[in-house]
Image (cartoon, rainbow, N blue to C red; front, side):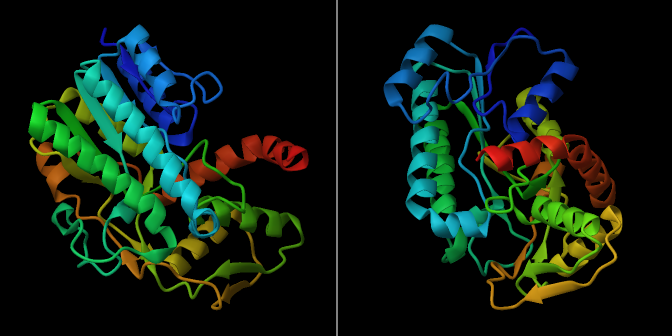
Amino acid sequence: MNKKIYIPGHKGMVGTAIWNALKSKGYENLIGKTSKELDLRNQTAVQDFFATEKPDVVIDAAARVGGIMANNNYPFTFLMENMQIQNNLIDASLHQEVDQFIFLGSSCIYPKLAPQPLKEECLLTSSLEPTNEWYAIAKISGLKACEAIRKQYGKNFVSLMPTNLYGPNDNFDLQTSHVLPAMIRKFHEAKTNKNEPVTLWGSGTPMREFLHVNDLAAAVVFALENPLEEHLYNIGTGVDLTIKSLAELIQKTVGHTGPIIWDTSKPDGTPRKLMDVSKMANQGWKSKITLEDGIKSTYQWFLEHEHSFKEVKMKG
């Protein structure tokens, strides 16, 4: 419990959930720096920080993230900034002899048409989904760096690949958010505007899996406290549903009664993306939060913070 644990990205959705999970377990020696306090893209600044703080554990929750639109519009930014952030953290952790490094990636690292459910072994077996390949390539390079350190130096560097995440502190900006929080906001705003129609991208037929961020945080704590035999583990529920079913579930939860319009001129993305979570289950961890319960609690959080979203929108 006295380990000094540094959590890059501790103010984001994932980092906040991990920080809270560790606190609730009794870990007190937690370190976090905002992007203004420490620019993780700056190699010298990161090296100086590690030399001064000397953390025992690093849990890398820092990344530039976004949905299909953001990945399409800013490919170089998503590729370069994510590589800069993770490379600086991984390299500094190696040279400052950090005991344990937990790297967090994404299920988008797997090929677009890989057999379902996605097994860890299908990594790099065929081409990626073009709409998010920039982010995926960055994350692949990060997990491979951790694998290489594990192989060359025998250090406890492990990579966890979560499926689509959602929950408190999510990004509800309609220009950069992922599908689930975007739907929550769209249906809520349509509801408050006389239940006007809601237009959603694509056909609604692709299938997706969703994991509550508190479940991911629990998996991270599990990885921290239990030796893992391999370098890469999928983190998910092992259950998926169509985007259309997701929309209907969110619509019901929000209480919107207007029509849903599917804009089929917009891309669907990967046809299906279900994780094989058997490796992590064999280690002794499984998710606990159902999608229905998770959406209810996330919508409640959204309602409690809606005023702050509107303020940000007005300022920016």
